[in-house]
Image 1 (cartoon, rainbow, N blue to C red):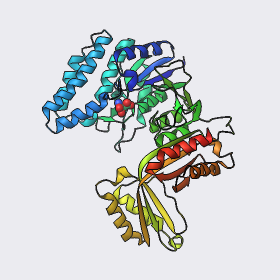
Image 2 (cartoon, rainbow, N blue to C red):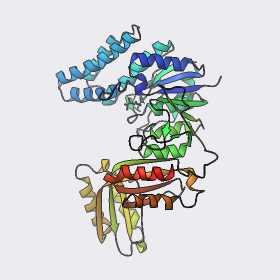
Image 3 (tube, rainbow, N blue to C red):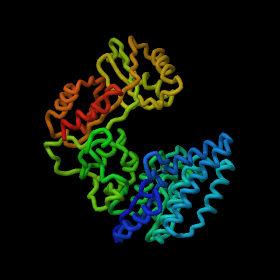
Image 4 (cartoon, helix red, strand yellow):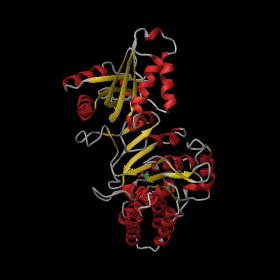
Length: 439
Ligand code: ASP
């Protein structure tokens, strides 16, 4: 029988009653045989996710702040014990929590600590659904470089064959030394995609608290259009640029196997949601744009040097500076005598920007180096752009009418996106202007 893998995010695990609702969703379709879960998320505005509390506990334990640790750990304990009461089962969670507390105080790693929210949530869901719990440590493996090890898929396939149905905790696996290691935040989506690949699912359902993928962030544009289907590539571009419905790396495990993803809403399961498919067909010529996403906090280092174009190896020497400092760049727009590095501010903390600029000066001897520290990147994404003459003209006209000064432009060679760099303060206006031009 064909299989659907369902991943439920933090808001779908927020309390016992929602978990019961999740159980109804799962049992409503007998193809939904594997369930991957996140740790309990926020129940209301201002609430704290269990994962955030766990990170806090780790820091407090490390700093020897024991009474603060106890207080934070009690919040976690109360949350799980309340869920146990709501689902009306005795799972012995108190004992499990004691064991976890002891291990954190004995010096277990940050990743171990952070993973326990998913571990407990999966145990609870397995009991609610009355199907086996299978730990992610049994098959999700990371290699020496901290990347997903390819053996994961085979291990997962042979293990999960033995379980016609199972609940699996998201977000973590084992590193090359057999220790617990987590993905980056929101990585439960990656775990779900791995399981979908391992069991050769026909569909990977990602259940969240929104009815699909919107053309842009609803906090920025009022009532944006919900996208009915988009390609893996479009999703990757949009989620990388800040559309945070799905982790940007969750695509890879399903893409290699051609498994479509459906984004669905636990609180409105009847909504169609968004399908993410290998290829979108029938591009709508009136809407060449599929979605718009923006990300703030980038720095642009612009370098000018006369006759740069004739200096063989200039770019290589420039990039060797980044290599030496372990800094990654996002974009590298260039002209005849100019080149700019667009870098995420995350890489430039603690005086690194100044050091980098100094070394660039010593290495490539530019005429002028100009730094702009508060840049937002806004990506306009859509396969339809390729077929449509005039898309960029419409985009830039909309920006100029909105009075937005464009600092940088980059268009990928696949013509899937146009990226503009604007002042951080213009980010929201920029997204609004582009949205209203195309939708
Ligand atoms: N619980 C983890 C987080 O909050 C992972 C996830 O939810 O996917 O980032």
